[in-house]
Image (cartoon, rainbow, N blue to C red):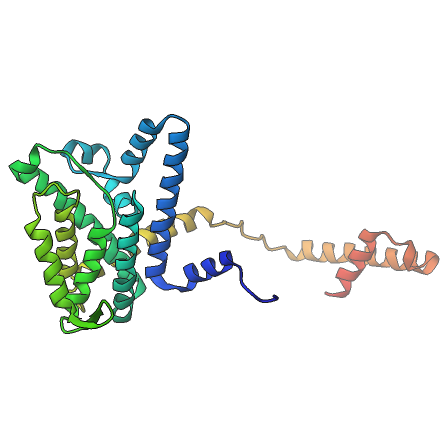
Amino acid sequence: MQGQRSILDDLKHQFKHGGATIRLIFINVIIFLGITVFLVFGRLAGAEPSVQSYVDAVFTLDTSIKGFITHPWGLITSVFAHFSIMHILFNMVFLYFSGRIFEQLFDNRRLIHTYVLGGIGGGLFEILAHVLFPALQETSVVIVGASGSIMAIFFAIAFHQPKLKINLFGVLPVQMIILAAVFFLLDFINLGNNDGTAHFAHIGGAVIGMISIQGLQTSGNLITRSQNITDAVLSMFKSKRTRKMKVYKNPVRQQTDEEYNASKKNDQEEVNRILDKISKSGYESLTKKEKDFLFNQSQK
């Protein structure tokens, strides 16, 4: 059927026009699929331990000071990576509903900055907890996933519009601030439990979300500052690139009267020669160069 879009075309359309929430989901899913395929081939090649070690080094955040210093990029990469289907499924569903509401209250760019800063804040909270608390100092764990980022988005909504209600399970209207309080309490009472969940990262993301809407209309707002810094850095690179690409042309030297008259005389003599050739042999006897010269002279 003509005009019907393919699945690939539809995905491209969604990524381009679906807003920041959809783009973030796409990025997370693509990275998840890439990691999964990489691990599968590593397992088939009999190199699963080394492949898993490489994936951990690139996409996880090590909560030990030594691990963080040697692999600092984990603060960013870990918030876009997931290793299990249930983990990414739950996080992306949560991100979809939270992100859609966020976009209605704010804008796409603010959503991306809140997501990234929430993930960074959550990671730093987790590292700090392993430094400060004796029960955690004996353990060195790695964290991965977008939970801290999503908590930042959710708590920004809840504290910006505390009376906003959503239908829980599609039927039960609940204020978002109440849901936020429940999430925070669940993470708090499970701190220190070895349940495989980065509760400090969740709390860190929540704190970033709360801070992100303070002084919302001022230049000192956390997200506004982040956007301004990003703009300044991009502008610096853009201006540097522009300077490199700039072409400096040598100034055109003006002809003297004598040079101008001589050039004009030469051109006229060439025109006369070509016209004489036409009168003797016809226009078709002219070379391409002669035809072009005659045409250019007629335009002056």
